[in-house]
Length: 201
Image (cartoon, rainbow, N blue to C red; front, side, top):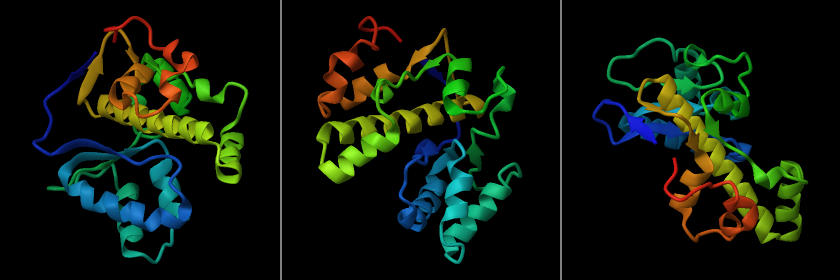
């Protein structure tokens, strides 16, 4: 179970940026982040912040603002929430050297098992979806992205001192609980086998 710690009185504790935002939409993603930033305690990502800022059109005002905020993220700005990049800014809560999200999650006892990638790469799943309209592949990609964003937000909350959990946390169980029956994939035996006993953390 996640124990939420006291945090600033804002509407959102952590704003995650997903890992597969298409590059042409980079500016709109950053614009939305800039707008949400003022009602969030943190804007976080696992390397995506730097990647997105580098990839988007550098002339856009929102990109310039995001680039500046990311580069100065360790400098407190009164009245504004900071950016927190879990690839670079979570070392104080980690015991591992790797900063790959899957390794970071393992170190923090977050179960982020990815059954979607058994026998297929992300690239292959994406091709099945975009070229062949494979709805099952689309659902698997959706869950992969949701898991990545949720686990990054949880790591960021831990790094920021906003949450802790004992002894561990099953992120797939959290996804299943929130998604309900929205996706067939989360009701499949391959996915439900990861959820453990009902009511467990």
